[in-house]
Image (cartoon, rainbow, N blue to C red; front, side):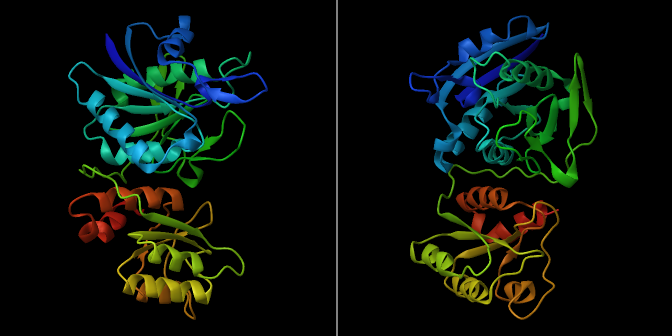
Length: 326
């Protein structure tokens, strides 16, 4: 008998249309579990933690960190073989990556949800939830960390991103590819993740900004973050990690002022590398910025927030990014 903890947090999978057409999260965890019906895999015992009922666009770092700590509590129980988390798709990739950094051990954690509301006749929620339970209960899922499962494909939290605003197969892992798939009763793992880290921490640092480069944008947002006391700013640069000369100057000033700067690329694939001069990546590296490999901007922000919340976070920030950069 596999014992799975179901942690429900809201999102489209738990949403219904109210009078006037507004779609809001209102379906409780026990109702979600009951919606599985005959889809619930045989030999599986489900316990429900009806934790939150919010749209994931309303979450913040403190809420996501508290959620990750709650998931860790379930995963640590001797009577828990896996954890399934229902969550809205808007910020699912960030909450999942945060959980992957915070939850210790080999117990599988699977995030899932829906793109169609609970009352939709062609809703994707129940089948996603059933497959997520099957994955969380699979012995071969142990050690894979936190994953996202949609449309029977599952992905490692570090690599996965939401790629389409409304399609049910929205989650993809780009050039890295999915971890595996659920096909009926069979769970197949195609690869196992190597870029993972557990970061013990009792808190998260919320003062981490995110800036995306665009034609002609200057460094004023970075300067604003420094003035407001940001501990770090993630910069999504052009290409290999280049920036407008004024952005490069703002990065240098930020590092001098004690604010960590992490450099990513705004490209959906590929990695940053300091190559270009004249205000480009080489100058940004010389200014003291940390290059984040192929981590996306939102994932780099989560990693920085978790690292800087740890007691030794600032001292080990560069080391952690080198470990996770790929």
